[in-house]
Image 1 (spheres, helix red, strand yellow):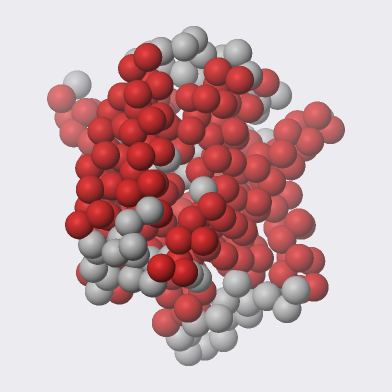
Image 2 (cartoon, one colour):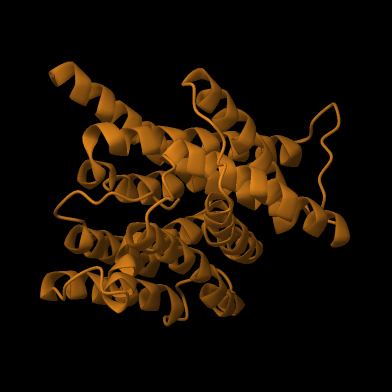
Length: 301
């Protein structure tokens, strides 16, 4: 049993490190001129290959009923295409570490969404967590010296779209179920649908990315980011089924911490005292909104 939990902890840390790594990699890609639909296409494509292999090895099937494909389409839209389009666009203008802080709002924003859908009861403790999360964003947005360039603050609302969509996704699944599909089948179906949706959007907007040898830094960042995301997402889903959603939810802390660590190590970013204060307040808010009992729904990431 102890060995199992050591494995769970190792996987949790890996997921946090992998998801945290995607932020500076995204920054490298968009700084080089690559844009959201092109990056998202490869995220879907690499995810489909990895999840397809896992699904085949475990003897799983693809979604079959029309309702299942409709469900996968919704997940592809609100779980990846729409939030990542906003996130990658905001990443052009905001520091990678700040993007990691903003994305850690997912479990905090999930609370008011759950209240609106009637999936949760009012809790003063969790409301306090929501207030702290919003205070953390204000610590980034309001002080003149919080960001390297004051004009960056206008891109914060766009960055907030991604965690809001992820929060909606988790509650949507909690309310409606998965149409009889397990998590791997849902993510595989969503990846396949996502390829169909993202490919023409990337082509029409001139954002399609065609990696050619030798790969440059930006191309490598796109591929590595897609691999990191797909691997972390798959392992996270497995972790929820084995260790429970309460344990797995602790990944929120690790994503924030690793996101800032990777940004400093890879991009050489530095932050004002206001941003560090925002990190502390955000982590306190996360502690207050963490789920107290297992919940059977997909994780948003």
